[in-house]
Image (cartoon, rainbow, N blue to C red; front, side, top):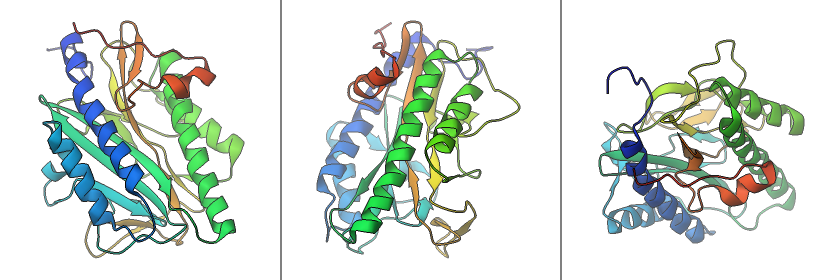
Length: 276
């Protein structure tokens, strides 16, 4: 519809529930399979099977030159890690980024899982990185529920990171709008910005995805042209959800409960998107 900019109609919002739900189911299945000795190619196959069994298509496979359902980012890999036949090791930190398309709309989400075992000190540090990143995501989502402008989300994320760690926030990789394409306008920054972005009003759908470094934020790209790593070899972490703003409130499209459990302690009650 002309003049709507990044905003979806009520019918479009309702259509986005299914790809979000399927994305969540795929990530749930993958998380349950993470264990020492499992390969990320095996996890990729689980995700693809889950998505296709629910009548959807893995949207990462629609990206030119990419053949997989997941991006699997292990330890120092920041984003775009290609699934491989290398077995996961005890103590590995694994971010699993996944998306599905159904009915002409997209879902996109990421979780981070710590492989059981390994050196206790390393495991504790990695668990802390994941926890801070995870909670920053939910701080950003809660901010969206109250925000007047989208930039308030990035402010909330940065404030959480600053208050709880000395971790670095990626400036090269940010969130985005989502809808009929996986990556749409507007950009969703994970830090304070001078320009506060578009108004938060019904129809706005965004993928919020803090990408956090244990140390420096500089990166390198492997020879495969996809895999982005921390230049200093330190760990990185990502959590992501697709979230819709509608006339009744917000709904986390890629959480099976709409975000109710995680948002309750933050004083936010998500509201299901009506059919029309």
